[in-house]
Image (cartoon, rainbow over all chains, first blue to last red; front, side, top):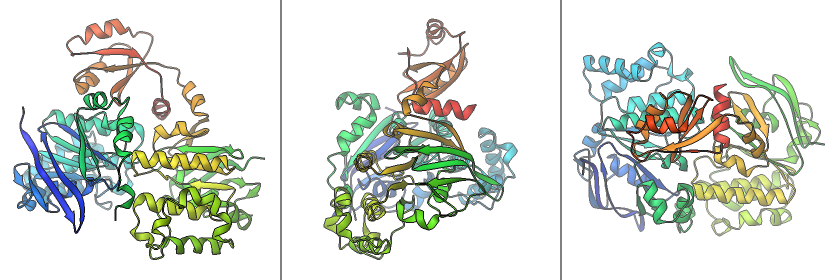
Length: 249
Length: 299
């Protein structure tokens, strides 16, 4: 099997008596598009926070991009890419300035930051918009730019938290093509979504219910295993029995 | 008389045209959907129809009342659930409900039958502050508050955005029940797969209506030849398919790619030319609302 980029064993996170993430284990490989699904309150956000170095597990262990999630949170933050559903670039800076700023934050030298800015602009076919203020871009473009910026330091893995929420269907597909391209080049993609058709685009999909990982496989094999017609059916079958969803604090 | 009548309604914010000459009507008891992405103008339309904004041009009526002149008559007739949670976070569940009842001059018990199927699900938490509810519970409370005065029209701005697929179907079930009680519902959503749950829909993009019809009628507008293709490597397939003669467009569509083709296209030749891709399949496909939307957006 190819190189493992994320490896998690018996990962658990409790808040007082509440077990948000309950003993989950999985591996994610280089160049894989890993779909991370679950009902609201299933523990996805808590798990993502641990994997991206923002919080430490209560028990269990994990490695992300070669660093220990229990001890090396800071190193993880530097070596992963992260894009949230809320647009997080600077509206009052231009496209070029935003790329350059984040390149600097991630420690690229002036020279390599300039080079990387050119690369990303060319890839986005966005060179003509270099001096456009980000605030005046349409939402879909902002999201594509956010993704590009999340890869500015060529991270081994990029975490995408509902990246296409509210984006029109044409741009949503362009966005997924960017994901495909990045994955083809060996970047690992870890993505959450509420669009079940997007779950189909993933190499493998996991589904969390009540803090546990109830399913993990390719979309095709999962549908076969649970005798579901689509990912939507499968998700409903698994998440319908969620006990805590609505009770999550 | 139509419950909602919209005529050439336009609204700009500075240079940005949020809504451009939009017209449609909604009949009594209809479940009407506005389908479109963020920035399409859905929220602006809601704010105009709920008399919270004034239009630049054009007009609309709700139950025959003009949205700019008769706003005082309109407000008691409508229930509005904005996209952002807008109840009082430091009031409890039941305090929020009584507050909205008193504003509209009604008693909670008079509307209890109407809201019961929704409110009973959160009633065990009636002493909890609204800010401490989960997303799904907040939404049920917001819907209960929007219904407390038994409105004739219910406006719901993206009630299913950001909530999981199971809660989404629950919400649509609730809407169907309300519709059966005679309430006219105008609901917006960015999720194309929810369009089929409405009786009629308007497809919205960049301030304009791309089409209005029943979901089936909208799908009938799709006149191109459509195929569904797949193979083991979906990304290679996407790139390769676009180079084949007769292919107008190829885009990812769930577990397949959709392929729009012209008369020069030959499926047998397609399979031969892409013979290097393993487990390649091609079959005719039925278009969906999303195919129509993509098609209309590109025109």
